Amino acid sequence: MRTVAAAALLALTSLMVAPAAPAAAVAGYDSLYQFESAFLTMNPGDTNTFSVFFANTGTTVWAAGTATQVNLAICAADKVTCNVAGPNAAWNPGTWLSQTAYTTQSKPAVAPGDFSAFSYNVKAPASAAASVYRFNGDLVIASSGTRIHPEGYYQEALIASGAPSGDVTAPSDVAVQVGSFDGGPTNNDVRVLFTAPAMNPTTTYDIQRSPGHCGIAVDSPGWFTVQTLTLSAGAFGAFNDLDKAQGFYCYQVRLKNSAGAFVYSKEVEATVFGSGSSAAPTSSSVVLTRDGGNSGILDAGDEITATFSKAMLVAQGARIRVVDSDCGAPANQSAPPATCSPQTTADIVCGTNASCVLSFDGLTLVVTMTAAPLNVVPGNPTSVQFPADITVVSGITDTTGQVWSISTSADRVFGPQGQ
Image (cartoon, rainbow, N blue to C red):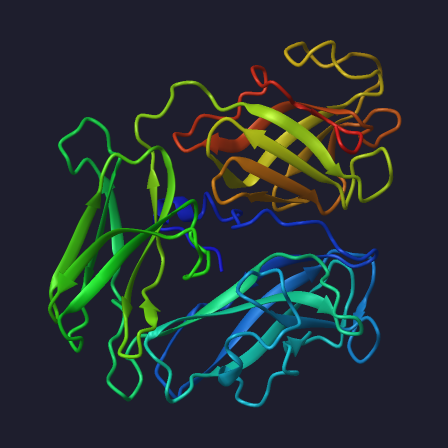
């Protein structure tokens, strides 16, 4: 569901998610994506299983067979329209929960703080053409169909060998390299390379690019064809996409089958560091976009949105230290925190008491509190009162490794809601 091309960046960006996760939709209900089974490679007629795990981060027990049961609903390609039949109804082997839901929670009861698997079988139709098939979904309350916390879950099945008709197949070995392929001083060129499937006739292959991280729909209007290659069966193909700006880029290869429909390769991601700017990244805006817990204090359910001057990366365990403002906000953004005694100093830790999700372009970070921050110096009261002042950050950097510069940021204070 979340993919990054470079292995060295995988751990660093494991908290990146394609769209920023929105707030919980129903009081008492909330969820957080944990992990999932691997994407599948299948042949027409094969049956296999997808599993995804979500934690109950709300206050209501998910009880199977009652009004609080939670289902994994089917969503359309826009990841917004859910409780629909979806484009892959033919993949239902007869075991899905309904025409609009894949499955329900595997545990009879999922208490707050616990998690459950949501597993369902898929059977590739015998006539399935070679392509990537995406299964979009989100958790909903079974009794109402209301989404709990839209997160844009999806898993994919790749039909690599094509349907029995022997139609064309998409390349299965698409890869990218980043370097200086035009002899320039900066590693800001992306090379896309693949092999035309041996069973394909001589045909054309579109190399497509989309800005930002991979994980978007294969037919999204965000894709742009940067080059078209005509290749014979088994031929090697490559294209150099030169002089890209610093940031993230996603690539795929598509071609048309005999019916005139496009079939698609997997998506591969390239990160261009380039020379970049020597200036450290700063935040232009930090806002408490939702005060979802106890009003006026930083706790579970609160959501903070930060906007940056550069594309950013978030490490597992990234830490944001805040000082509360029992004595009010600082005199200005570049001044030290307002001082009085006693104030509370506490840590927001990504993956421990908060989920930290970057937008596809890396310019916006949404921090959703799953628990109260960890007190470092408890004040009186011990909770963090709004407005809260960010004083120290670790593990949140630009793509060159420079840490978010708090002291030079235009905004570092958040709260009350809307500020």
